[in-house]
Image (cartoon, rainbow, N blue to C red; front, side):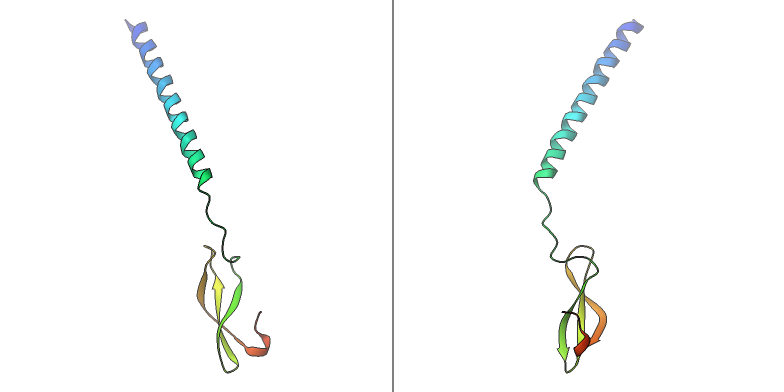
Length: 81
């Protein structure tokens, strides 16, 4: 009796592992197909947002690759391009 129960448990365990591997494979393939869009900028770079006279406010590129407002500012002749 114990041998029969252990054989059934082994078959159930192998089937469960096979199902998990097959599901993980299909999910991984689905994620590879839906790759994220490239970032609009490289993180931690700065650019001029707006100038008032010779003082310019700036924006920085965040870790997500999007431009965000910054508290940094520059004087017009020395602003980054």
